[in-house]
Amino acid sequence: MATITLHDVPDEVLSRLEQRAQAHGRSLNSEAVDCLTRQATGAADADSWLRDVETLRAQVLGGPIPVQELVAATERESH
Image 1 (cartoon, rainbow, N blue to C red):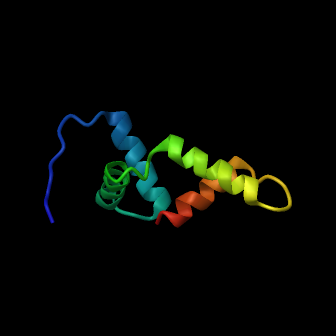
Image 2: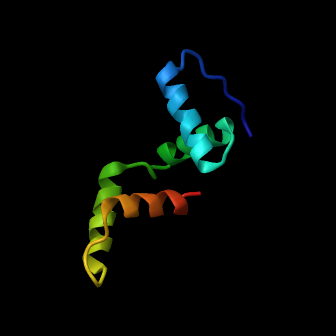
Image 3: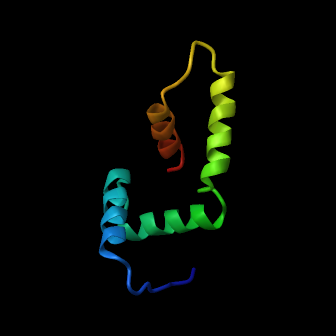
């Protein structure tokens, strides 16, 4: 595997990445690799994700699922 070094990362970006890493129980490096992987593979395409969510919501019996619950489930599944 390759190693990269990032320069000039804004403090706010670093802070948010650290918060995400802590929330997901991962190291900063692992969180950064996950973010880069999802972005590079298109997994982070918001428009595509929203279309998939709407398709799933249309298939669910018993009423709509709150968006917050769908986001939480997606985050759990991506780890």
